Image (tube, rainbow, N blue to C red):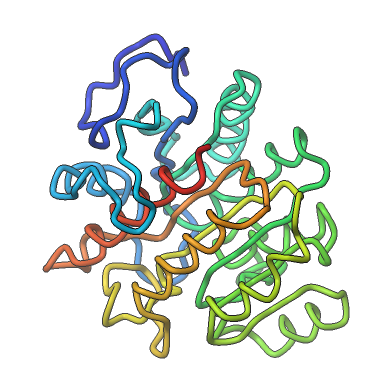
Length: 290
């Protein structure tokens, strides 16, 4: 993709038109080719942008305004429908360009598998990388019904790529028994059910390290985020997720990229999920982009 061409769709509010001047690049990964239950997350990035003008530009949490951060909305990567491997390759190439230009990559999904090539690209630039992962699901399978390219596999892929001890999952409440056992045997950190308190305990151990944050919206309870492909009861509140984002923002870790995925507007008649996701994106821009 070329960054000197104007994006024809709606932009996230207050985004800048000049790529060269931007500190961060916001982009969409409209892919849901491998979902195992309900498709529709490929429409998430567009709708998150469309509702963003309903937000305030000022964060009362961080005492910061969007005007203080220059970020460029590059639009959606034009992924080939149904071609998972080519889509993943295109995402990695796209993020390589962002990182080569010295920009902070902030992605919107799309299914969670899209985070895999992004994390791989970020690791090439930051070899001390640690992953902070918020999710209802372990995502530690090696395959789903014989298919290794699945939204149930991205955390296993990155754990094997950078070492399981460098991956920290929070809010997990669903997964195969074998996935939990693999994590335990290989030294990967999994915090079941809760996010904020265990995150506070882990962050000091990551002080000074490069960190990538990947958020599956289904870490939230369906009462807070019904618009997702694989809803799972017993999740956290939106307040806890906001507090967790702010905890990372105020810590001594170096956030080098982030994403928010699995928003599926078709199951979200009240638009509760897309509005929540849009606010999370705002807080990630203001908290993570220094």
